Amino acid sequence: MVLLLSVSCSEPESDDYMIRQQIDILQEAIENHSRGDFMAVIDQDYRDRLNPDRKALQRMLQGFFFRYKDISVLVSHSAISIQAIRAEAVSQVVISGGQGIIPDNARHYQVTSCWKKISGEWLLNCLEWE
Image (cartoon, rainbow, N blue to C red; front, side, top):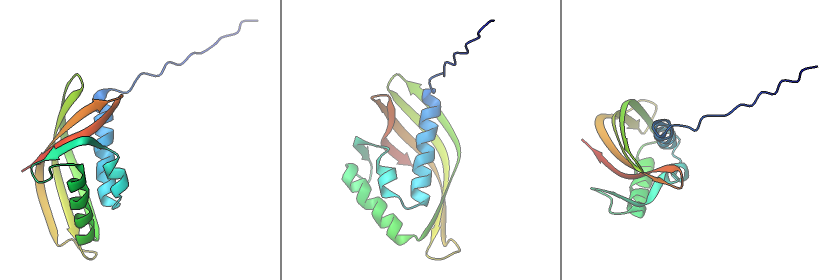
């Protein structure tokens, strides 16, 4: 009798794939008004042109959630460039929101996100949008 053993080795997820997953988490967190899920992806040293730190970003996000009852986020394309423990993703993003069922505000942005790999996890370190 011959016994065959199958050993499955799972490939580690690529950095590109992990960053795309984090972008998906951010998108879903915004649409679900989940500040905790959103902030779980944010690096402790986060900075952007409007928010000098992580706490300011959290306050801005809370105001955004308060202002818009319904929010939709569409990330149509992300080009990711990775260099060791740093990465940059350039995405085309459409955000719409409103107080009721029909959005009263929609905008298109080119978003550049900076990522930092910490203990094997990619965290958002900065954001720029046009």
